[in-house]
Length: 57
Image (spheres, helix red, strand yellow):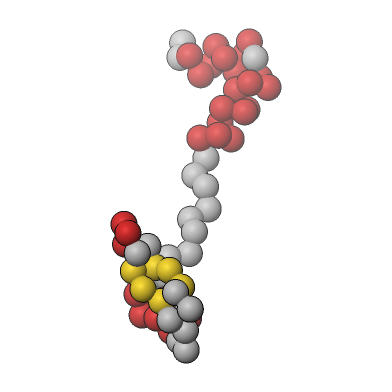
């Protein structure tokens, strides 16, 4: 008998909570370097410490 089966019988609410926690989360949208430059047109940006892009004006 596996721990999963024992937990499901003994504490079904807690088991469901653990199963839902394990499910994969939605992935955030990844923007390419080209997309970033297109979005930042007409403004002044530079790369700061650690590679972060920051607006300077």
